[in-house]
Image (cartoon, rainbow, N blue to C red):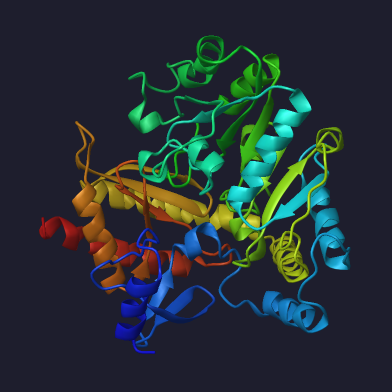
Length: 432
């Protein structure tokens, strides 16, 4: 098809809510390799969004695709009613790199499903019903996941599930208490107890929190935050659920899991996205005594699919063999320094934050008032595309540029991205 045919048929046959960047001139991707993608016109782009924090080891990585092809030729599908080597091999590998005593896995198709399984499991294990979530958090697309989400745009269509209570998120740049870390004494964390005591029955099933809030704008909680939160949650009968859908698999640098930077062992971990380098998969991981309290039977037609499991294990093995979590740390530090240099140069950048190869910049029209520069952010995204760079957008107001390139990129790739971003920021500012 031509580009015009694809765009026309998207409008005719696909829900309008399925959002595309560049609405007036959608980018139609034709093929991808490594850190690059190409559109139908043959233009090459440096991909610094990575399928929304999903391409861990580069597009079409031969070490992953070879395993996928081999498994597809052997057996492409079985439901969970039958065992395969692929599902148990992946589960064993996950247990080997899991923090603490987390050992048992439930495989599904997405982060949404992984979070659903986590909530159901927490409710069964504790015997309690109410769940705490955080403002600015994102948990997925189902009704339960929407009710957990703390962003209005993604809660529409009628949120029905009950028993979900939101607490203030750890958004230091826009502290809801108008305080400053560290003199704040981590008020946002300590206020979790007040929320439990005033907005719940006092006995909760748990709290679910992204280690770094992704769609909320790569919001990084301050040091010590999760230790306080996990302690409070457990004191009131609940489990601490770490949502690692975006931060798992070495993305934040040094460690396999983002939560390890906060030196906390969660009761349940959920993950997806970068786990299989773009092949759909979801993971709910917990301790045996928690997993074994799940009452009744479940089946999954596609969860634990052998091709998806092989893709995930191949991705994890490659990250381990090449120590890509170390590369994420080293190259991520280089990236962060470059972004901070751009902050000094461009008044649009109000905040630089992130961890490893998960970095964001929040754009503001005035650094004193921190007024979100929403239209300028849209212009930066557009200009970046013209300059051969693909980045993402997020935040409650849509004024945060999110960047999550493959974990095996080089400092030279980062320098190329920084140069394109530098030009894009200048062009967006001059066009205002």
